[in-house]
Length: 58
Image (cartoon, rainbow, N blue to C red):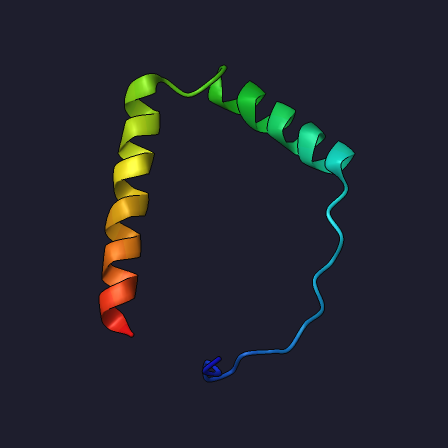
């Protein structure tokens, strides 16, 4: 794997499921509920575009 300039080697920190669930609950509260189908579609499209650009950048 290529090193990024200024990259720091760090160990992955465990992310307990109970913290994940609590953070998701807080996020949903801030957002006012679940994301709309339209928002989820926009995220899916963004992820596809990002993956396409990333694969051609290598």
